[in-house]
Length: 471
Image 1: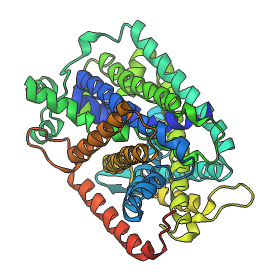
Image 2: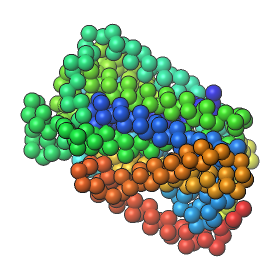
Image 3: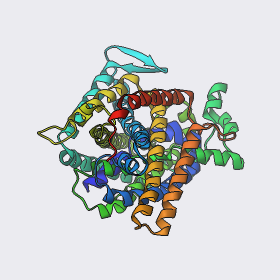
Image 4: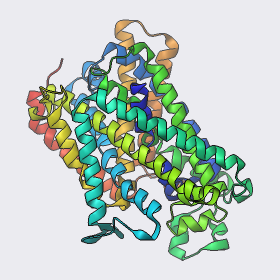
């Protein structure tokens, strides 16, 4: 149960509740989002087979990093590990910035966190109250991780059960609420939000920006499909805790599969509910409102707001907990083998956890509340590219290991090869602009972050290379 809670809690974070209004509905609509998420889940199932094969053979913290090191050597192992750190660690500050949004959605005009000094980042106001509150949550959950996965896993299990219950309740409410009707679905494949904003168009005029025709539909699907690695990143965090959790590694595929299925349901259900319960959702999207919160209030009143508040709180906190664990254990594994400074390999004598790596993760994560919510999209892109690189190396390592050990059936080798090919497709969609698929690749800020991360990685590589261990 604790292992499944770790995977599911990482898959479902703030994005499943905030992105229906920020990304999914405008970029892909109801139909495009549903198709993209189902396709993304199928790809994750293919990739999960590679993890199910590799985890029993390498039940050590570090997961993909260890697989790559044994199959492709030190340099590629470092590249894999470095970008996986980006995939995991960026999700912690990303989730923390949603804490203020939860309180804003619940307290109405009270604005209880909007006090003290404030400033603006990318046009978004950041208040001292929000920074202090979110930072306190990050420190608390970081300490729970230092105390060990057993205690953290118990809290994670409670959070994920509450999360699943809240989403199920909201979905059932949409089936019976008179406020929710399929007639509310407008622009089922999304619309060009940026163009409409530049032209200052609202209301009925937005229909002129709707995505239509084969190219529009393809663009709608690919806009969300391209970030599937971010949407589902977390199902593969199980290898990072393989040394601390006591579970049968033969059940890895089942655990990951159930987590992926639950994740798909939550993404599709939340996005659909947001559209069918809000008659003018395109205008709400243009105004920057939290569409899913509006939908819950339309259907259930104050109880709906509380329900969304509980669901998002559980999603955010379980995401923070899970990615703290994954990123700190990965850094510990890399430092243990000399790929990162040895200080990150220090283990607490009392709790048996990588305390130095965990403290570093806490400190880095505290940047999230300081930067504010407008940086979320950049973090999403960084997490997507990091996860895609990790998926690629895992699938390739699976093929090498099967050939070396002679225990892989032909169909499993084909699945691993397909997973590697699809991972490369994700990387291309994220990094390479494709004509006719505008809005799918990185924005310029994400390219800058990617460049900075590559530069930092190169600096660490040159500093640590002589210390790299092979075995």
